[in-house]
Amino acid sequence: MSGIGPDNPWEDGREDHRRAQLEAVLMVIDQPASTTDLAIAIGLPVDATRHLLEQLAAGYRGAGGEPTRGFELREVGGGWRIYSHPDHAEVVERFVRDGATAKLTQAALETLAIVAYKGPLSRGRISSVRGVNVDSVIRTLTNRGLIEETGVDESSGAALYGTTNLFLERMGISSLSELEPLTPYLPTGQSLEEIKDQVEPASDLNRQAAAAPPPDGGDLS
Image (cartoon, rainbow, N blue to C red; front, side, top):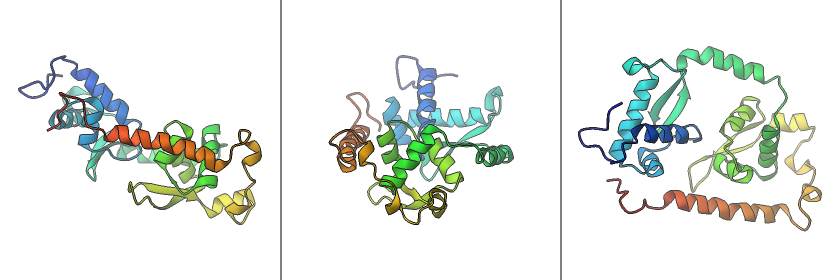
């Protein structure tokens, strides 16, 4: 693809690389990301970033001779995110439904334990605890009916997830207070609250880094 607009906004000629960077970020976000946030992530002006996003979205739809993809890039609610294509909703639904009969993976069990013992939590907080993206695991647990949205985080606006009555039923308990205590399984001398306190500063640092202004020369205006 050609350079962006009449005046290329960077001199290194790495448009394809920037486009790939956008795709990499879009594949791991758990909620729509604004053009400005994406521009900061890849170090380009907002207008140039929007142009790349529109190129990606058009390419996924089959523009310019590109093959039509099974997913779409859409701008919804002021942010961009990749979604499965509506034309393939039936096969996606079948896959999710059939997968409900399979055993939970280790990743799903770990995520479910975090929500059960420390919920309600946002996806971002759960990701901070596990150290990996949990978007697909959250979808799996939600589709299985084991967790659900229980509210909204006042500071970030992110959805909060907690366990369901089905989870309690499957565990054979009537309240989360009946869960086995974790203290015997934690590192010697540590409590669950102490581990939580260790996780939260790292999460705060990540949020501060994401909100930091771009370096000199990265003006997004």
